[in-house]
Image (cartoon, rainbow, N blue to C red; front, side, top):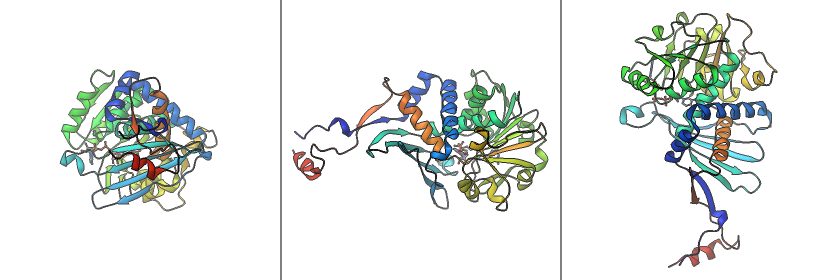
Length: 349
Ligand SMILES: NC(=O)c1ccc[n+]([C@@H]2O[C@H](COP(=O)([O-])OP(=O)(O)OC[C@H]3O[C@@H](n4cnc5c(N)ncnc54)[C@H](O)[C@@H]3O)[C@@H](O)[C@H]2O)c1
C-alpha cells in the first residue's frame, strides 16, 4: 500500500464545473462587482507589483501566452491562448487556467480554470475603467462582436456602470441571436442591430470585442461622435487591431501596462511617444481621466497579469467554506524533504 500524500501535497483546484457553480452561488452581477473592486484595489497598489509584458508564443493561427506577476506575498500566472479560427472548428477562441502560489514557500495555493474567469475579469476590468472614464449617466452601450466574451461585458456594464440598454452587432447574425437569447431575463433592454453604425445609435459607450488575426477596422473615424467612451477589447496581439488609426488620433488613450500595450494594443498603430495615460494613475488621482463632455476616451485594453492575479485571489477567498473546489494531490511532499526517491520507492506495490 503506497503511503498517503501529506496534507501539504494538496492544492485546491477549481474546475470549470466548480467555477460555474460558484458564480451561480454568489450571483453573476455580484461576482462582477466584487471582482471589479478587487481589481481596482490592485490598480491602486500597482507600483508594488512585479510587472512584465506577457510571454507570447505566436503561430500563424494564434498565440499562447504566459502572464506572471507577484505582489511580494503571492505569485500568480495565467496560461491563455487566442485562436480566432477556433470557433469555426467548434473550439473556443480563448481558453485559460491559472495558478496562485505563496512567495514565502513557493508552494501553489490555488489551481483554477480561467476560461470563464477570464471572461469575468475582462468584463469587470472594462466596466471598472469605464466607471472612471465614460460620460456620467451613460445608459446605452454598443456591443460589437457577440462571441464568448460579449454577454459578460454587457452584464458588467449593467452591474457596475448602470447601463440599461445594449445594442448588439456581429458580422455573424447567429452570434447576435445567441447573445440576445442569453441576455434575456437579465434586466437589460437588448437591441439586435444589422450594422455597426446602427449599433452605435444613441450609445455613450462603444465596446469592440471581435476576434480576427489581422489589422481589422471594426470602427472607422466617421462612426465616432464626440463625447463617447470606447472600450476596445479585441485588439490584443501584434498585428491584430480593431480601430482605424484616425480614431486614436482624436481620442485620449488609457492603457493598462504601456510596455505590453505598445506591442499588442491599438496603439501599435501610433508613433512611439504618442501621449497615453496609465489607468492606475487615473484611479489613484495622479492623472486626469475624462475632463470634458466632448472628449473621446479610449480604453485600449489588452488584458494584464495583475487583473488575473486579482481574480485568482478573489476565487481563492470565495471558495473558502464552500464545496466549489477539490483537493488535488499535486505536490510531492515526502516526510523527509530530501527523500523524494525514497518516497517513490515506497510507493511500489
Ligand atoms: N483585452 C482583454 O483583456 C481580452 C480578454 C479576453 C479576450 N480578448 C479578445 O477579445 C476578442 C473576443 O474574444 P471572444 O472569446 O469573445 O471571441 P469569439 O471568437 O468567441 O467572438 C468574436 C466575435 O467577433 C465577431 N467578429 C469578427 N469580426 C467581426 C467584425 N468585423 N465585425 C463584427 N463582429 C466581428 C465574430 O463573428 C465572433 O462572433 C478576442 O480577440 C480576444 O483575443 C481580450
